Length: 252
Image (cartoon, rainbow, N blue to C red; front, top):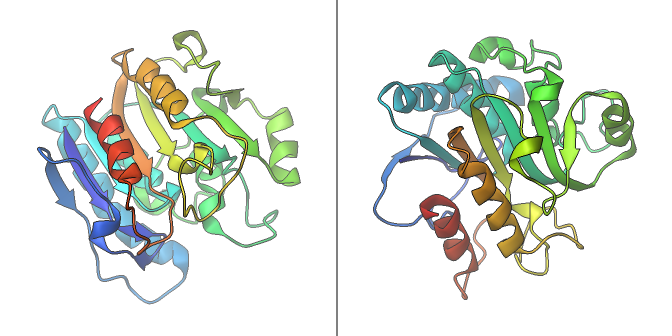
């Protein structure tokens, strides 16, 4: 297993120590001198080497784990799998829907759009640059998503994207074939994981999320995993909550 560390929140460089990775793994850190331009050009420049690293891992028989500060890095993960010839579906754990668009978002936050981009929204923004082919909606399973904006709820009401709760997740609900297991750690109840950028109360416990993730991993179909550490940078972790959580996810 190789960890691909992408120490960014979108195009903002984060301190490496904000990602307390477990020891004993090969870690490949992706950092880039990002060009001037809009956020999509900058993210495209960043995720091209992420995709290359993922593809290289897969082609050498390894399973990549992409660790970053937001969910958009999943675009690089999926592009890399496709470059390696792996046609994967995705299991997307998140407190949010991540299916906003530029036309519907009230905040303009592009970190709320990656799942929508994966299923084909406006490929000219970044997918074309990455060579990312759209995923059929019914090959995406959105887990939890307890905090939806109205445009997201409207979209999901008619889309073929699958949905379930954390406790309800089992093998029968998973898309067929190889899988990307994506975990935005804000899926965990905010009371258990402090200093999240976008905390949402009333969520599942860390143990519940870990158990559900293991059910996916136990299928033997996970071709890559990506973990979005969506907490504020530079905040202390005096009780080691983040380190234990990452170790549990990566080491099983």
